[in-house]
Amino acid sequence: MEVIGVKDFNEMSKRAAQFVYEDLVNRRIKVMGMATGGTPIGFYKQLVRLYKKGDFSFKGIQTVNLDEYVGLSPENPNSYHQYMYQHLFQHIDIQRDQTHLPNGAAEDLERECVRYEQLIEELGGIDLQLLGIGENGHIGFNEPGTSFHSNTHVVNLTTATREANARYFNDRREVPKQAITMGIDTIMKSKKILLLASGKEKAQAIYRLLYDKVDESCPATILQRHPNITIIADNEALSLVT
Ligand code: F6R
Image (cartoon, rainbow, N blue to C red; front, side):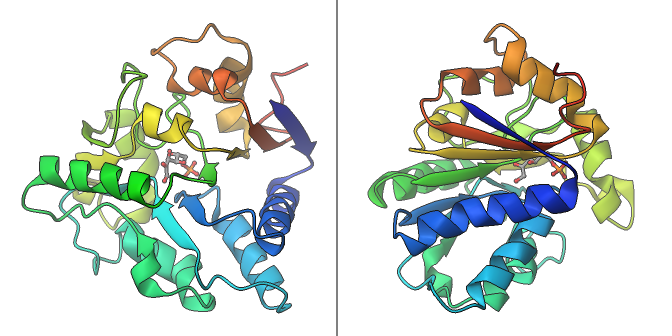
């Protein structure tokens, strides 16, 4: 595990974009796992900036997102489909049919989870998975207590996670109660992982990821067992790490 400490959110975003840029230019990524939320917004901005220099293309690259809310259609402004379009896809030359997210509006959610897990397998697995981290140590929407053997599944979001995400909705009652998420095992099968963290709210989770016993009560602790993970975190997120 490599931990790269940087000054702040801006430096984290730049460093992460450079990290991914090198893999893209050297054609080491065919399937890229994407994350949403506040943390990767600066990263996507920087990646678009590097893309505009013109020395790599997203044609032929497939993307798979970690998660999507249940009950929101892909057109809903709060859906992760829209987030990805707004922050990345509309700015780059990726083919839309090569961008994949779970369908939170599917009639049969169980079947949708199976479809999504199979899709990732059929694509040949994830070459690089981008992750953020929840204050309670969640990765994807795998909340504390999720089995380390889980595949893509439907989760009930905790009150804390719904509250943390309420800032994106007009009214906190609009925050969905469920999501579809890649499981811990899905994430762990990625060949490489890049986890980003910024801000003091993430300090405890980063400390636990690095030093706590590997245990399902803190999902991120499983990452200690991943053979190729890089963490880029800013000073505040690393403030409990000596
Ligand atoms: C997002 C995701 C979540 C977030 C986490 C942190 O696709 O899977 O695990 O990475 O909730 O969210 P932010 O970045 O908003 O603090």
